[in-house]
Length: 278
Image (cartoon, rainbow, N blue to C red):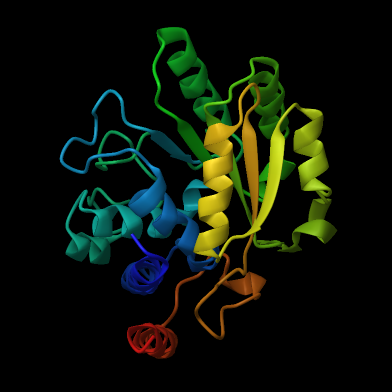
């Protein structure tokens, strides 16, 4: 799939994030929007998966460790064909399967239930170790938030992954630099992120998390590297694609009202039209 096609899909993913959180009157649009391009690349380019066989044994695994950004994950899964796109408007509604945090028992394509920050990476490490022990070729990907890596369990998992040379593991840090209480560097600085992971025997790559060419190069390099796990530190903009949400920590965990939804959708409509004219 070419870069323009991926960009168009990413715009649709962002529209669904806005529509879903607006419909629910709850959710986490900011970090979902910052990771929208990453979700798009993973599900439409990188992951070995089959929407018709979501549980196939040799599929690649993806763990959304920052599980509160489920609107972005759900939007990518829906557009990839795992379930109907129209179901996204039932996000967080009572009794519906698309709840605020991913549920592996109810949502097709979800490999791990997540929500408690810091825990998803440990499960991804376990999956990667299991693949090695079973002689399987599938790869495991985990997405963490930059605020999430303040959790100690992240570094316990990283130490284990490095020690066991899990070169089938790729950790993606959505580095949008904001968390619910403000700037990540001011709340509890995790910097320098690359050097911390390198201390745990990771290969560290830093990219623009909104650039599909950069993603292609980084993920290709991760597949080639042997003997160590890889971390891709993706520099992103929280709320990316929606003018009034960008770089605003207040949009970490609140939904747009009717007027805000209209403005956001207009921003994204214009972005889509610009791509169609490219």
